[in-house]
Image (cartoon, rainbow, N blue to C red; front, side, top):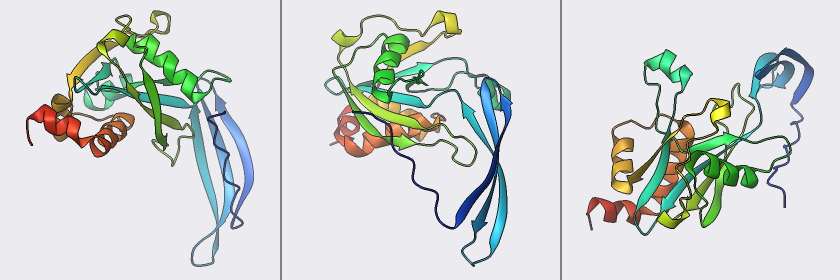
Length: 211
């Protein structure tokens, strides 16, 4: 079964007038011109640039429910270095899908490459667009259940791709502390952490020692 989701048809009140590829490198940029009927009935022309960076992505938060721990990553992120001087954000395991690769297969591969982990199960949480006004890439989000025995190596990423990933195991209490302190600044990570807190609050109550 494919993980692909069929695109919704273009609404009757929107007409695509032109699509032009203006850049094709590591990122592709497409200039799109369309007409849109506004809510007040007027018709306006809209011009936008749409960016796609490689393929769509997956993101996975591994959870050891018995030990009440999670696995996060830290690696150099140049845009964050330039914008706010914090080049090593806390992140869930994530990566881009290769050509023809389904989201679930990519999730398993990235867990092995980045974390050295072969988890017990993977559960699909949902699909998110991190900046829908300009980015076309979608992110498939997963939770993974793991135990200590499922950690097969130290991970670290693919050296040939310039990856040097630190893998950090945190208690759920420590994870909640990072969230409360505003230290989680990656959107995929925020979504998955808050989903875990909503669906498994006992992990955080027990880990923090509260009833």
